[in-house]
Length: 185
Image 1 (cartoon, rainbow, N blue to C red):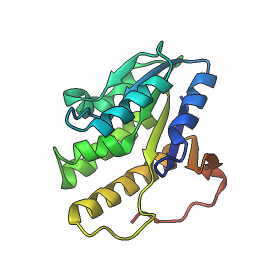
Image 2 (image 1 turned 180 degrees about the vertical axis):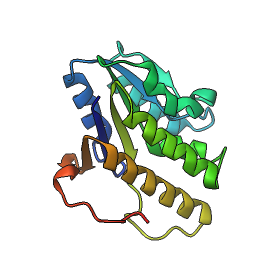
Image 3 (image 1 turned 135 degrees about the vertical axis):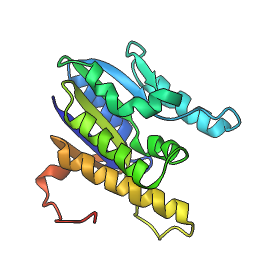
Image 4 (image 1 turned 45 degrees about the vertical axis):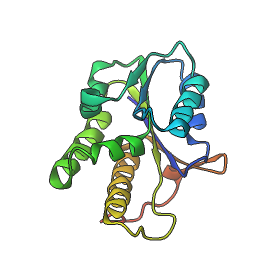
């Protein structure tokens, strides 16, 4: 199993980099789409449609709606060594999950998610948005989301075999850097 984690800001190229790695892998790729469609939001629907157009049509897609969203932690167990899961993205998954659970339950589910991917027999590429590059959000819910995603990203990066930061169309190898002890405490 090889776990690759890719993080970065919006429009940084992280999804395209993930697609490139998946296409180059020689493995049977399954795309795991974590975004929910909101029929009343035309701009969001177009973003999802663009992502669908950019990935190979031959790849099976798992849409993380309803119970599949809750089962994301168990998904890697269903795949073997010749398979690759491409999950895009943790941020959209976490935003939806925070509407269902919070506090200790959410933290436990995030731990299970990391453990499920870390123990997988299949390979996986997990994409996530990097948070906290700006001002402290005014609303408690936004601060809670930022903190939770920051911790989840750090845990995925820690257990990953490879971790990248995509910025302005370039991917930087994070595993070659120096980890900061207790940076997410």
